[in-house]
Amino acid sequence: MFRPLGEAELGRLDDEALIAYVRAGRLHGHESARVALAVLVYGHWHNVARRVALKVPPAAVEDVTSDVLVSAIQSAFDGSSEGEFHVWLRTITARRIADFHRRPRPATVSLEDVVAEAPEKGVVVVADAVERVLERLSAEHRRVVELVVFCGLAASEVDGVTAANVHQITSRFRRALREELDT
Amino acid sequence: MTDVNRLLEEFIAADRSGVADPAQFLARVDGLDRAELEALIDGYLARAPRRAFDRAAFEASPAAGVVASLAGSSGTWPALLPRLRHRARLKRAELVARLASELGVGGREAKVASYYHAMEQGALPSAGVSDRVLEALGRIVGESAAVLRAAGSLAPPPPPAAPAAFARRASPAPEFAAPAAAAGGFAEAAAEPPPRDEVDELFTGGA
Image 1 (spheres, chains in turn green, purple):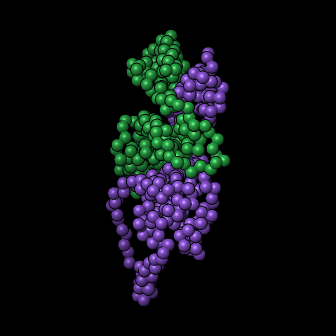
Image 2 (cartoon, rainbow over the protein chains, first blue to last red):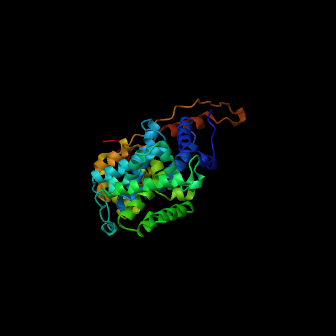
Image 3 (tube, one colour):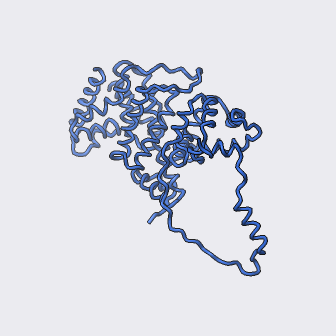
């Protein structure tokens, strides 16, 4: 049974629930499916665009960001995506940035807009440094790093680990990241 | 606390109260510190929660083109065509006038405008748009017809299954029934589509 939701309720759904809602809404031909899609795309646009902007020239950011979101959401609908949507979106972002650097395309850019220098060599490698270092950690240490380094929790707010251990784990992560970036 | 730690914390705090620009924070460090801060900001953004929906901001943002692409039948034209037009520094009316001229259908700009608008809105099936249109459009915005064709051929979302339809039928009370001749005339007018012209063929005839 499909129950149409309003904009505010849609905004409170997580990604997976929004995708399921878009599917169901389309099946029932309900216009709120488009609103749900807008909540999903708009919600992720700024984060993806800023990630892309770290790696590609400004004139190409919008193109690459559009490609990322269209690809990620399309594959979420056709069933070819892997895992949770936010993880899949991370994967697709890295792939599209790599594609951009591997297959330089002629872009229609006004000469007045060409102010950015080409990204430094190795820029794509930098994009994956965090994930590579995280992959080498145990699940528990990865959880601690995710919460403290990337979600901004205080050491004392992490369940099941002393503050001293949290500091040790995050310090090791940061050292490993610097080594990864320095090679 | 190192500069990198402090800057990352400042970035996250700024981002939670608005949208922070990584470049402003990265400009304050260099060398390996900059590379580390960039990787950490990237890691944070990859995990950051969705931005709250704001309809007005959405409508004015490039995200609207992505939604039109995903919801429409024109592939990624809704995202791509406005970008190409902006880069070519053309208003829609200017582009339409040039397109009509390139296609040799000057004087029928209004119809060309209607079709071009449908392309930007994702409402025109891309398979029906002829190569002539894409070649002319490509010359105007500086992109190849092949790229435009490929962008338009993004698979549309699966069509929704037809929901159960329940028609309510009722006969009007005799005093409100239309005279037979009038009803027939209306039905004929509604059934007869306007004659197709060259512009229709160019935008919906394919090839």
